[in-house]
Amino acid sequence: MWTIRVLESPEEMVAVEELQRQVWPGSETEIVPAHLLIAAAHNGGLVLGAFEEGRLIGFVFGFPGLEFLPDGPHPKHCSHMLGVLPSHRNSGVGFALKRAQWQMVRHQGISHITWTYDPLLSRNAYLNIAKLGAVCNTYLRSVYGDLRDGLNAGLPTDRFQVDWWILTRRVESRLSGRRRRILGLADFEQAQVQVLYRAAEGDDGWLHPPEQFAMPEGPLALAEIPSDFLALKATDLALARDWRFFSREVFESVFKAGYLVTDFIFDRASGRSWYVLTNGESTLGEE
Ligand SMILES: CC(C)(COP(=O)(O)OP(=O)(O)OC[C@H]1O[C@@H](n2cnc3c(N)ncnc32)[C@H](O)[C@@H]1OP(=O)(O)O)[C@@H](O)C(=O)NCCC(=O)NCCS
Image 1: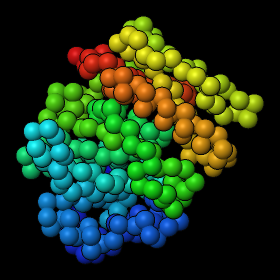
Image 2: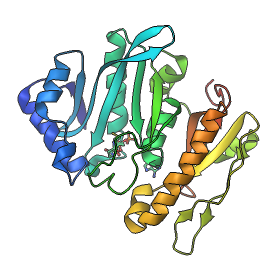
Image 3: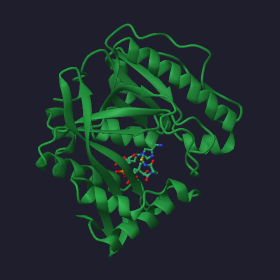
Image 4: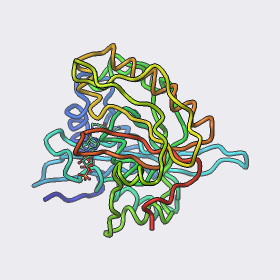
């Protein structure tokens, strides 16, 4: 079993550097160095580590920031990196690190955490949206320029910027011991959801984006993404780019039309993945 604790010492930060090399292999320039992690940790930032038998297996790093609203600047926590060793994924380490971050940021008196992630990564989407209860209506094009590490090279670094309103009932109920039943496709079909497009299964075994999509009209809509985009990208970079530009158009259009991402379905039986869009806060499954 693993434990989570706050990291502060130079030695611990060097271990975080090493962990980054294993999570984002291939480019030394993309590593956040120990001195910056220490400076952040000494100034309200948080570096949390997950340990198994004394070995660092995951970390989350963030720092205080400001968001600029019409009535002036407001404090927030900017969560910059979350990484778990490949050998330790899918066993709840990422969730536990974000939960610890949630607890600590609440104690700092901050109610809002933001971070960015690639919207085509199904596991990240499931963790961020379905399990943690973040929401999103902000699509950022090529936000980090061209990254050179092994996970990001070759594609524009488009990102969702998610909002995690950490004092809301929505988030508290998802992080409490009483985990809600994660909703499946059948739940949304019963709620008369609109499917914005049908991805086609190609002869190559990959899902292909369609030519067109419908704009959402009712309260709930679904937008499918590939369930293993990194494997797809490693096999067919041109198809990965098609998905990047297609999904960019879909999400920019629906966000502009007032919809927001409020849930995510990973249907383990079919291995397919959908974002759930609503034109108001979805309460399906929250009670
Ligand atoms: C994203 C990351 C931090 C998640 O860590 P993790 O410890 O695997 O996360 P968890 O186990 O808490 O949650 C993952 C969930 O996704 C599920 N999942 C696995 N494969 C999935 C897929 N293809 N689609 C959707 N969900 C999937 C898991 O089953 C798990 O859910 P469950 O607890 O209900 O079973 C980790 O995968 C990682 O380090 N990735 C590379 C770096 C990265 O992308 N960092 C984030 C951006 S900075």
